[in-house]
Length: 416
Image 1 (cartoon, one colour):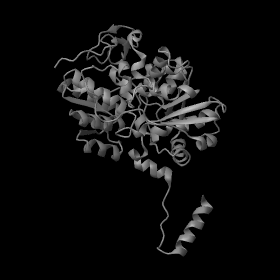
Image 2 (tube, rainbow, N blue to C red):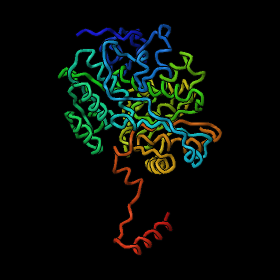
Image 3 (cartoon, rainbow, N blue to C red):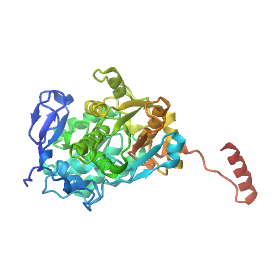
Image 4 (cartoon, rainbow, N blue to C red):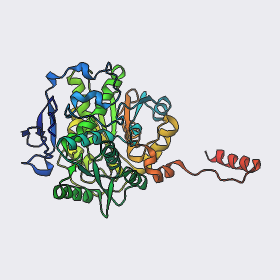
């Protein structure tokens, strides 16, 4: 079946050489190779803004279909993706020493992850380009989101994960019917093997690090933030960073909403990496090309030693006059505890790293105490139960009598 092209997409542009290409199933710039990440271009002057404002009763990220590279002939997956809630976390803000702190909880998406935004677009592009099978490499969340969305539209999915992927995430893949390939190696090795398999077996490559259309799904969080926070736009938007696609996409969404006149200014972006996986921070600080590195962090979803979309991410951070920072695993675990106990949101390590970054940025005077912040929580804490157990501590174990309870409570309260 031939599908009509996305009505407002004008082509693709290489982030390195600037060459432009027509809308097609092309992943990277033919001249620049795998490093030649492409950006989707739109004819903004032809977009009717009323199509995707608060007047639109469709409270999902499909309300922004005019700003997505989707054929009008395709029906989105029936699962509700996006339009996730934003909470005013007053107690957590006070604890961190900031005037205002908002939490956008993307753990509320169908597979409990921000990555559903990208995968929902990816499965539609696969169908549009005539594929029946789709694949990706992931440390967990992109994988579970792809398995979920593939099940919703009837595509077969093959998922490549490194051996360190948390079991709850692997279980999600299997329950959705994906074929899971555990690669005895790193995420980078799983990524390369997935790319080779797509070429050899004719599968659609969903990897957002190199697929230009997937980032467009991620930018919907930026579009939503602009609309949801229009009357109280934060000074900073804080995002955990692994491959660079998420913060790059959110930045693009915010910039588009400014260009279309929905907001007057774009918040500064703070990109937060783990101390054990910070090649992009080093490139940001040096101003030089990224140098791949080894990774060692509990935050598996941002444990990326060779970020593919680092240029897009750094461009968006600098365009917003933002900053980057790195946090330790201990700081991430602390952020998991305080965000749950004072903010009511249970995030996985990578999903909560942004909150750890807020605390550190305040300490380093990057974020001022009088400013306001929105942190994007990109994944639910139940996706990595082992890390959650480290952060949460142990339950009280007692004999079934009131004296044992009283003694246990007394000892517990002294410690806490």
